[in-house]
Image: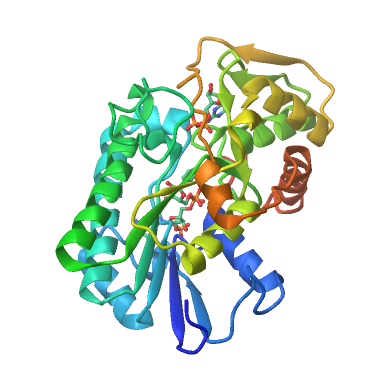
Length: 331
Ligand code: NAP
Ligand code: GDP
């Protein structure tokens, strides 16, 4: 990005986990530093009440209001394994509508650069590990979230088509499982870390068992939302390909769901009964992704150690319990 002309950066889904982390980093890093706000930049963090992006008219109105030159597109119907298993068609339709509206309106309004957010769910279930940027379309995704995965996969197809037919600079980011402050801590519909933090908190408060879904054996790579935010800011300013890029910790940093639950027990200070409900799904066993391309392009990048990031997230949850997205507060 040139430092002389004015840039208006619209972050869709700007109030969510990743959007609020980008806002935090932009506002707290030193001005004009690698991740801080640069002179000439205006950052807009849009919430859904400003415009339902499933609606093309509302999407055009949002773009007419802010006239973005750059877009980081995060808005989506989002959820963890159990929500994805329940609402496959809704995940497919809503995310397809949102993505089509954002990409087409960005094309119509001559947006200079658009980054859309995919997920490692887009990768084939049966493929040689580690996952890398060249393997997205090599086979069907895992059956547990195929609706969400196909909607997200098509963004990569669209990015290439917009580039080849109209010369658009549309690209995408592929994060692994994300966690941090301002996450959705719903008990059933959230991702594993916020869901288990909330469950562990309630178990401690009510003197009830802490129940982890599945066997605890599946492996995941987790990235702290504040680290991911820096990577998005870097990608916006310094990454110049249409091809997606995986934004992740190293493939050697997979941890089991049991290790996650153990760390949560420690961070929450829970001492009661702790067990696994093996009648519930494990989902995909693992999906290790390589960050070799990221490290080659960004140079050195320091990821926050998992336990430190988890402690900060638990602290945020405890400090903000009454305003956090927790679903049923009476549970
Ligand atoms: P999140 O916390 O649930 O936030 C979702 C955001 O999307 C919210 O700001 C929400 O706005 C907005 N949104 C949802 N439906 C909308 C609609 N119809 N119109 C306008 N805005 C809408 O999700 P997140 O975890 O930050 O996820 C952001 C992106 O990262 C998504 O594309 C997701 O697929 C991707 N991703 C997430 C993870 C993860 O582990 N969390 C992993 C990989 C990829 P309101 O809150 O104002 O309603
Ligand atoms: P994924 O990484 O896309 O599969 O999504 P999740 O963040 O939902 O993680 C799912 C994994 O965590 C599966 O192995 C689940 O069995 C396990 N898990 C254990 N407890 C929970 C929970 O309370 N919520 C969720 N979402 N997953 C859980």
